[in-house]
Image (cartoon, rainbow, N blue to C red; front, side):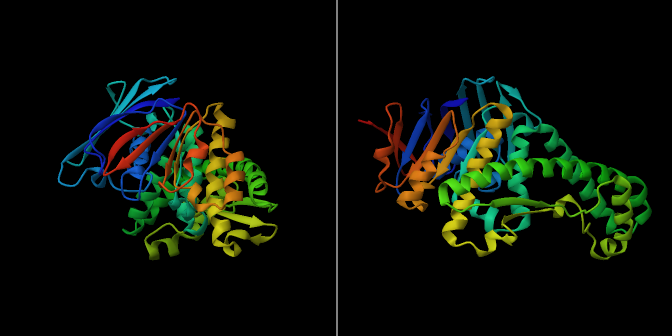
Length: 360
């Protein structure tokens, strides 16, 4: 599964153009602010119909214009092309010229794993940011998990709205049994996935850093394991929930933490160790996807090598996950030429304009 071409129009600061991407490794070289990350964002947008930077759709449209288009053609995929258009704030997604009503259907087309500076939030950020990462990891290979997560969130939103009205009986009779059922399904699959992920991640971190026994610990908010127990807990918690106007327990408050032995490692780790944690989370995500599906993702690496010293960079490249295609961004002064292979495509970017460069 690879991107064969990417055509953009009105997307961020990128010049309107169709770019040949039919290579295994594609290097994007340029100073900061020239469009390298925006190009990775356009690729990601074609995979998930959203920005990996969390930007709202309107920010993807070039200033002064009302619409933008990202159109990708694929090779070695079940599908030939995807076209996504934002026009006057409305987003339309077309897969093989057929309009999609649910972007969930994009997940299996050309899955991307992105490595970027914002990944530090998965290590040093809020519990919500960590949950987002692990939910995304599972959704890549388990669409049923995504369905259950969506249903749970919809029930939770409804429950919170009713809590504000004070209609407790509606919650107890109609919503809580469903919330408990879907919540327990999420907890069971999160626990299984976290154990598998942790085994991959612990080995990776040891290989690159030399630090052993780093594990991912999943801690559910509900301590109960049966529907009856969860319902009883929700009833006991109803008064505080009504007072706050929000459901104070459940999978939406689960936590993922990084431990070394009995100590929480991410709180004691240095900035360099946290960067490495974040980077290797993505490697583990790609490996877990491959182990589960037998497929390789497309990798999007945004200035990640710049943040590593020479030895850690060498070790990182040794543990790189298998991939069908990888896009790298580099500053001009970086030694990117030492990583060029015979089939590497190199583009220099300036003011959003792509200029191909010979690799010889």
